[in-house]
Image (cartoon, rainbow, N blue to C red; front, side, top):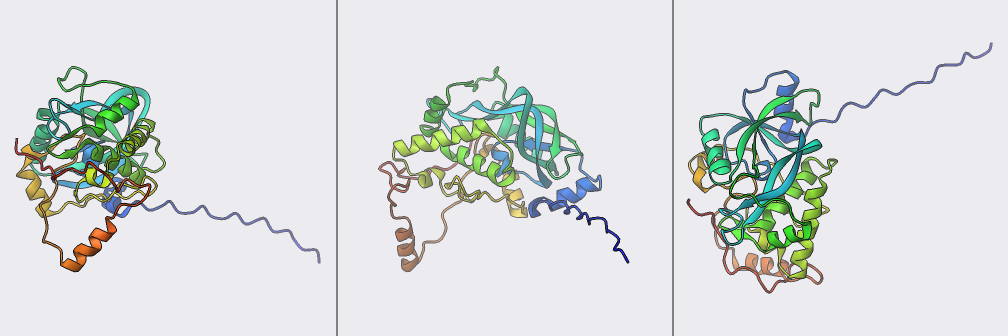
Length: 309
């Protein structure tokens, strides 16, 4: 008997990838159409240090914008004489900017953000359409803080090498301007690894190169903020924070100490002194390495803290 040819077996398509654990709750809510009424989109320091109480958060993007470091900052990442450079959004028809959206809860978040972004940072509020990365077919209306050329802190465009030199030379009560650039770049590599941001990553490279030429220690410039290390450009390492009751309480009671979208929050207080053996091990681990940024002749003599304003 002649064998009957069997049709080839077509493999089933693989299941869609699961969203990151930190966004699973938001993913489930979006899938079932259950979302809070007010969302805030962050594209700078809000990505890793929101500082306010929120119900859930999700990584995603907005269209029609481009992220640029054209806004000045004199209250947290710079001074009146040497303003730092922080991020804002400019309109760009084909632009896409990735960041993090937060479902706001409680009564303290908006006053907190008004102080952080508008009164201290020079930003204004606008509404935009946010596309969650986990559910691209869904959209949310989100509040976004944008700095316009009419504000007093506006610096505008400049050649990237000039921007990098300015960033490396700037620091303020909350720490060094370099820290902001590196943490934002690390967040993007970790949360949106397939999303190009040529302006951000080109500026990050120039900042690293400028710091290396000046023999500055990146670890010292990064400070001791508990947001993860961002020194290795090939190793994304920013951890998305999970809000806790103590963090919410602290953030809500200190809105005047917080910094705008272009900067990270204050460093934590010093911990207990290490035991002699632990101190010796830490000193050995921190020894200068050839060809690295661990050696510096200009390590700051003290760590800066965010001042009450």
